[in-house]
Length: 402
Ligand code: ADP
Ligand code: ASP
Ligand code: MG
Image (cartoon, rainbow, N blue to C red; front, side, top):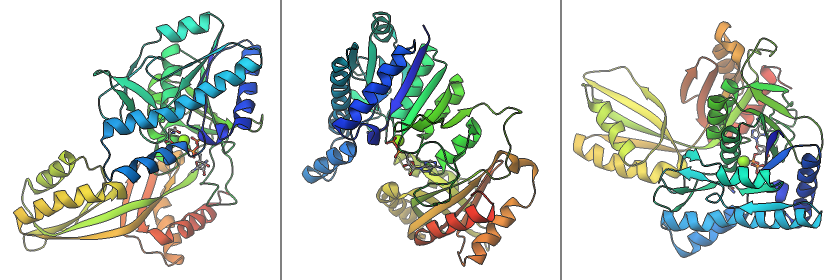
């Protein structure tokens, strides 16, 4: 019997009525002749609620304990879903990440999956049961509970699909597919039928939260086709797979954005070998994830370097920079309220003038560009945070994506 892996996001299991709706879908899939594994997220904003309580008690809760706490959100969902399926006369078993064989490294709150031990999953499936797996969690080599980072249930689902050799992984969410821009920001955004892994990687990396970046990396590596769709309708959604001849290679296929960046600029750094290595080495050691980096031309033996970090990393970045700038006898400035807007398209590679059109569009909207970075299929601009939504709408229109 073929195996299918489905993932249901928080909104899809937001209350008991919706849990029953998901249960019906899963039972129907089994009745069609599939062995079904369903990976489930915490109900609604349960994860945010748990985080809120943790921070009411401690400004910096121990990360090990945070993971123990947060893993409970998805355990509640799978248990309730199992009960709903039993009520419908089907047999189901709910499993924690650990019971489902999800092994991870030891990095609390953003652990990486290192392997999936499929023994229990296969045994339950071969016994005719529907298997419900708590998403977003695993167990480390030290036998501790870990979580995979926000949106991590996507990655649980893809990892299980890869390990079981499932042909497809269905991602059920609160939109009916991947759109040309976040439909919450652009009312005229259009649903895409297919998206290549490469484009989806760039979209996820630049803020399209519909799929966690790591889940797309995993899907590409293990060639798992993803189908992003709505749990509230039966319409086909968006297929994410290897690029092939049948796919339309739009010059620009989507606009994505983030609103949580900060920009730091080191002023008049000595322009000699090893300075950048020291600065970014220290930042890496402090666990700061640096995104975009720009070094200016050197003038009189000194140079400025600007870079961006997500706002959550700003305190750690400042601590590291305070040390570094003291040592080097230089200063730095902070632009806290920044965001980023990006255009993505597989056809961009062989089409000149795309970046120029993006810059002109932003200029016409009186939006100042602070930093620019490109890849072969993406152009990103860092801009003021309060201009981000306006920029997304202007670019969506300029590139005729609606
Ligand atoms: P889930 O809880 O199901 O994992 P998420 O909130 O993580 O759902 O992701 C779905 C949300 O992603 C949508 O509600 C939408 O606002 C947002 N989103 C951002 N960019 C896009 C895009 N390009 N296409 C579709 N949704 C997007
Ligand atoms: N519940 C977790 C979160 O809110 C994981 C997930 O939903 O994928 O980030
Ligand atoms: Mg998500």
